Length: 156
Image (cartoon, rainbow, N blue to C red; front, side):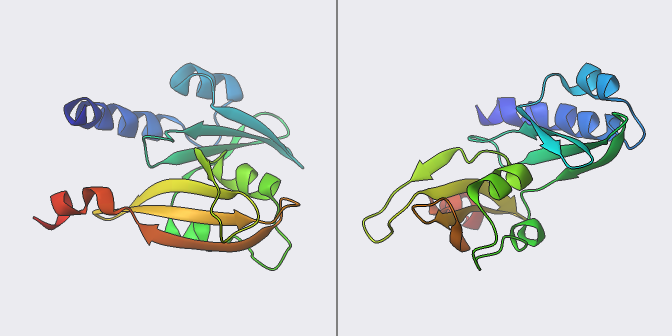
């Protein structure tokens, strides 16, 4: 499985380079295929291309009102996660618009609501990012943590 993923990485990187600002929606679909999800934006549309749950990247392609690419970015990053507000101003819909649907929705006895779990990678470290929602679907907590399952491979 790791060999297959390693073999696919150059193809993924080539695909990333192939979608650029100014391209049309049709050109994006021709290059990357159907998105995992499409989200309406106030002034256009966002195409979400997620590698979750096994992968650690999610690419957002923002289109303007005319259907041309405005930006392309990978959002599973510390700086992107840092934008998540825990003051009650973000909802589940906001998180999913910015990061895609979480591959895992967990529950724990010490929290009264769902916990959205994303996998990502910073350098050589596999990480999780947890977003805690209250019973109304409002973000109340968010933080990162290390995915210890693969740490022995990274340390040795």
